[in-house]
Structure formats: structure tokens, C-alpha cells
Length: 283
Image 1 (cartoon, rainbow, N blue to C red):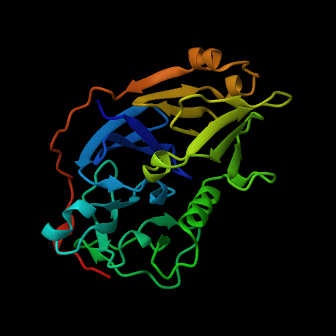
Image 2 (cartoon, rainbow, N blue to C red):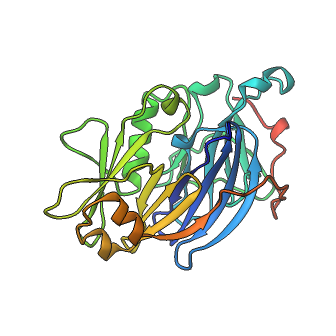
């Protein structure tokens, strides 16, 4: 059976750009940088590992991406280096800063906060690189659950808890439409980071379920961005608020921006100096 392709997106809070993570197999991902102003794409590096998509984040200006990966099958060959958090420049995974976690998957991941931290966490860093001062990293001492941390990350990107549902979040756009995300997955889907069911709501209308959508968000213009498998779509803000009646109509009105289905592994080198992953510190 062919692997299920999917795209996970991260929209920068203060710049018209985004990062896409394309899942090509159980432990194979590629990174893509998306210019939201022009809908141009820069396809970058590939990584063989499991990426914890709910623990990744993009910096407000889109210049950096923090990601968390694990490779538990490689314990014996990598001296215990199986779970790491790293910072890179999209669309590359080559780490500018990285740390391996001694406590395994209980640790890992990060987020870009509105204000600088009082004390920066430890990193192995590339020459002449200083980690962004507002970058927080999850440790085993963090009292928050992974779900609580993911909720915090959502709030940093304009989402708010839906008052009558404990596992749902809502995000408005400037045209009066709202996007709703519900953490409803269980079992295999939750373990693989496929967590959300999305719905679109406009004034005076019932929620419209975005069927078979893996990821959705609004951009800075209020347009709805969403992915299905390896396809990426945009629906204009004015259409979001027009009260579309059903999913087939919405899909027909949306613009297919790109289809990354047929991409094959390609070795790509990052155009900057990076840290040697296998010699980075373990904390």
C-alpha cells in the first residue's frame, strides 16, 4: 500500500510566508517554503525521521523554523541520540542550533514567544549563530502537557479556545468568517500527528465541515489555506464569508495552488553552515 501523503502548514505571524512539511512516508519528510504574497514555492531538504508536527513552530518573521523529530529505531547506532529539537532556515532541516534529549520523547519541540526569554536554553550552535532570544524549548520539567503546549502555540498564532468545547479552537478572519479546529483524532491518527477536524463558519450559517482536510489556516489577507493529501488550496476571504452551502461547492471555488504528490527524494544541501547532528550535545 502506498504511504498516505499529507501536508502540514505553519503560517508566520508577522510576514506573508509559511512553511509546509510534506509527509512522504512513515518516516520521510520534506520541507517547503511558501511565499504567501506570490504563491511561489521553494522545495528544500528531506529528512528521514518521525517529525512531531504538533511541536514545531515558525518564527514571526518566517526566517526560522523549530522542529522536533525522533528516530527510536536507531537507538543502537546513534549513541542514544534519538529525539532532538532543532532550529533551521526554511526550507532546510540542516540545524543552526540543536540539542538531543536524554529523556526521550517526553521532551522536545519549541515555540516562538512574543517576548525574549529571561534565560536562553542550552544549544549546540553553528558558528556565528545565536538562537532567537524569544525561542522557548520544551523540557521534561515543563509542567504543561503536550496538549497544553500545543494550545499555547495555537494562541500565539491567533487561535482562541472555543468556549463550550474543551478540545476545540476558533480563529476569525477580517471578513467575518471563522475557522474551527477540533482535536478529535484517536488511536493511529493521534500517534501520527493527524489530530484536527476543521470546519468553516460564516455569519448566520451553520458550520461547514472541511472534509478530508489535513490542515487549514487563514493567511494575513483572510484567505483560507488548506491541504488535502499532497494538494494545497486557497479560498479567497470574500468567498469564506459568502456562506458556501456544501463541501463540493467550496472545493470547486477554491484554487488549487500546488500538487506535491509526485515528488521523489532528492539530496539537497543547505546554503549555510550547520551543526553536525551526530556530535551535538545531549541534555
